[in-house]
Length: 431
Figure 1 (spheres, rainbow, N blue to C red):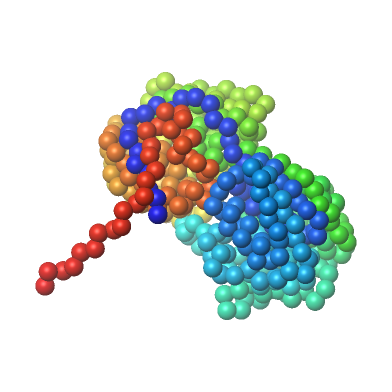
Figure 2: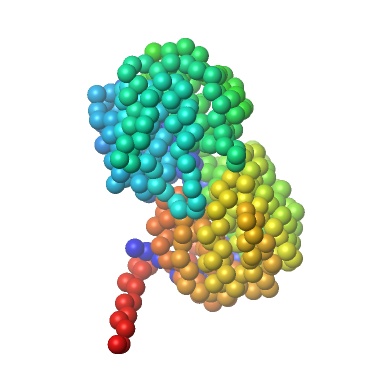
């Protein structure tokens, strides 16, 4: 297991290209199950989650071949339909194989998913939506088991929870509907760019989908899909992490290969904190000459401020002047990074689904533990501005969603080194 040693006091500056979007590529990979022709995906990031899903797909009879950043997937429709606990339990997005398996093979057994631990994230919307299409899903010994008994059928259904529409559930139901008989109308669908990317991929495979990019998707089922060739867009969360890092270190960073529109809420938040923003068609620059100012942030479904950047913006608030308030409206328990930021000298108080952050004039290096993917990135950013050395342990989390973040941060001026984490000391009582 690796850890990062981060020496504080650096200023991030320069240009960095965003890797392909993790949250976009995973459902698109699962879409390979919908056809017996090759699906060719370009700009695929080199991430642990991508490798894990490729292994899951191989379990399901999909041949995965990678050359550089291009991944070719070719499914055998007669392959197994069981996705085992050992792999599915490591990443939540693996549940996106459920809809394609049911739609193409009429059956599925997919372990309940795992992934980052920051509160309960139920799968009820996946089950509700697919059952409306005739999937017949039940839970049996920790597996979601479906036996549709034939082709799925169109339906009118509503998705969403108290905290907004589910991105993964929207994708799963959409992939079930494209091969269903008749018309499916899905209300309150997620509008995140990753859902749009999946819908466009399905259209390129021959699906008939109306309303892409809106809260209502209308799907006219087709009998079969064919292969396609798609390119994954730049990762807006990775880009946002670099841009927040530029602002909180008093630096200037340009991220290329992205759609700036996807970062509108992030850019506005950084502008309110005192950063300067500039952008073009495929790039965005953030610069900050002075100490940031406090502001308030509420996480919301797209195009609101993304929950996946909540931990990172909180790290910036820890060194901003004044008192900031973070309200988490997507995952109410997503505050596990607070305890580790406190170890660095941050001043944070949690009250329900809010965190009140009083900016400190300085943070000090310490040993911290990464609890999940985005918390890992926040701790790295905090370590870059802290005085002294910060050791971030369990960085396998960050490797799930950031491609070579240590090397790329170093290219921007961060003093960060990856090394093997030593074994924990074991002490015996003296009695």
